[in-house]
Image (cartoon, rainbow, N blue to C red; front, side, top):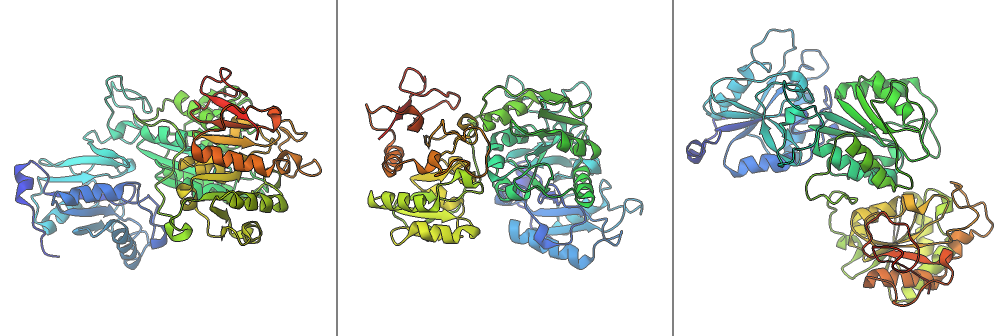
Length: 567
């Protein structure tokens, strides 16, 4: 490749003549010795950072140590294939400079030696004294330090910061503050080298992972790198969360509806994967009825020195912070409470609601006319209407002039076809967050799609089976209606299948109640002046609720205008 022209205004403005990015951990998620292009995933906002440099007319390149070549773990063809995948995801780079040697080979090109960077500058026609290196994960130590060279560590969602200290991520600087401290009162922030590498653990289903979102964002705001360890059922949701640099997946034998058997091989693989991440601290998020200690033990074996969790059980030496969950705290708030106790805070302007990455437009699937989503299925049968009842509810909504889109997973196609009939659009098996993001309201049980709807700001009419407490699991941070019999015999039993004949807690909800709830959510509130005569069969509409109250009834019982009515 001939030398790339260096813009004259870069010299005059004091800008670098070349910006060189480290590959692993800066541009793409660090997967040790990766030769598989399918495993290449960009670090969040890396593309925006590279484009910002390109927009200034400054040449961009990649400098990367690839000792897997020397160790026989990679071939040059594999390395080239990975580079092509990076360029497909992030656009072309003006130069790639790779050191193929091992750490004991004594070469002059392996970082932190300057040879690799100088070779890249020569190929770009840039002054070796006027370059910037972005990234280089902490374990590799310092980088080239000559002339006016500058080093920075890139972090998703934040500007690159100068880092001339050569410290490992999370190491406490002399006279400085401990890693994980919050920004100071003046709004100042520490350099990325002062911040920890953090692992957040949430091993349950998609809904649980979505509810962990505010805690994850708080951890990411105070960390140089944030990974999320989840179970297979939560993986898709984990990849939707802002602030996550890497997703680790483990099928833990102590959680889930159908727990996996204990596997020494899988357990050892998890410990190795966590150890490879060199995490400085971890937050283990669990539901109120779960123990964090099995996960904490494995993290300790992987070398994570500082672990925080809510724990009723005595943790011995497993937890550095044994936190006590506040009574009746919503799951999203409980996770954020733990993050705050660990020294993390949401960034300025973050209101702590559920969020996911911006979904693509839904019009190609749903059409352009306004619509309401009805998601009749649930992984736990007790939390869904019976198929017969769901079909009648759908027909009632369609008869009330609501354009209905029926959604469901690949295994629910027969259900969605039955519910949609010939009056609604059946998208069973083609469901993702796009349909929920575009809907005027969503009718759904107490299941993952309810939290996904809340994460994209959609109002929720929630057919909430009382087998778990509504105050802990209701849709969070959006106007919503809770439909169902709160005092049913199955209340707080955590039953997977309804133990009461006829499934009265949900199947007893009338068509009129569902239609009225949807009408209220679409129009912004319940019918004025109509209060419940049967509170436990009524519905709670939160139009501007703070998210912490649990009052039932009209004002002034709830200071945030919670109203209860029945049709």
